[in-house]
Length: 464
Image 1 (cartoon, rainbow, N blue to C red):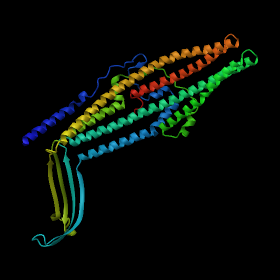
Image 2 (cartoon, rainbow, N blue to C red):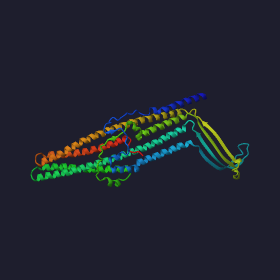
Image 3 (cartoon, one colour):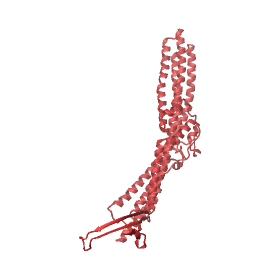
Image 4 (cartoon, rainbow, N blue to C red):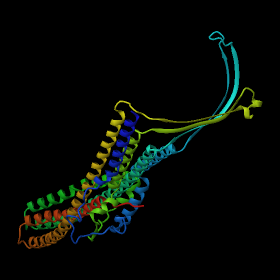
């Protein structure tokens, strides 16, 4: 019977060991050798400086991110989680060492003389002892649990890095959205000034009897319609300032004086370093964190298989006991105990079997989640690259459209002054020009936002 138990346990131990060793075989999902959208806009090398936002050469953006990484509460929460994971790791490591306990006291007792032939007796004594207990980690149960907690701690570090990457991208995106709205506000105000000049021209021509009052009313309609859009844009600017304040961990009133003044959008249309897909494995914190989770689950599977095997303990104590304190330290008062032991659970229903099945299922889930994270990372980068590439093409086209719109307005206004074209052509040119300018500003902002998303997808943004 004992031989059968030993054989079964050995076979199970070896099979689980082989499974644990083969876990990494199915870990990495095959990656493409290059990006789908790779062309002359992108370079297949990693950025030299991971602080990608500095390429925008905007001191205000640099200072905002600098404050955010120090004061953002999501970052502070991630730091707290790292501290908790580190404390749990130290708790698990404590199982490597023996436990020591010091006990002492005074005992006085009396036995009954009516329960046996032994006469009633009284006694009292002092005692003090130092006891120890230590588990010999022969089959690696403690070692695997420590490894699992270590991987969990390292996963919390990757979570912190992911929080930093996300924070930098959020601050940069909020800042770009703010500057985009401010540029749109500037466009609206300039168009209001231009439309007001056209309104004055129509009033002069009406007063001299050259045109009807309809031209004046139409000019006013366009002017006040453009002016009415200003409050909505200003409200949006306040909202983005407030959202940036939350990201920076400050009150909006502290940030508003620095950001209310209209600032330009960063003018950035340079080659972008994206690296190759395989570099995602060492750049994206979520990919590295998913890998750490796989390692932790593999270690827990190893620990669960160790539960099938015996546990060996060494217990002992040494101390003194004496009725009188004056004899307490004498050699005759010495007490000690040495008690090596082992326990081996031979049967407990299906608890061990299902615990191992659970650990294996959790490992499979972690592996699937890792592969899904890798696929999602590739998708996000490809999408961002495609969108950024096409946004640049859109900017080039809109610049030409804006140039034509400016010439159209200028020519139609000159012809109107000479009475050679109806005022409707001027109105159409004004509306079109405002639309073209807003579209160009929006395209520039979207292009920068796509670039930010791409750097975030590449895992860039923070590296200590």
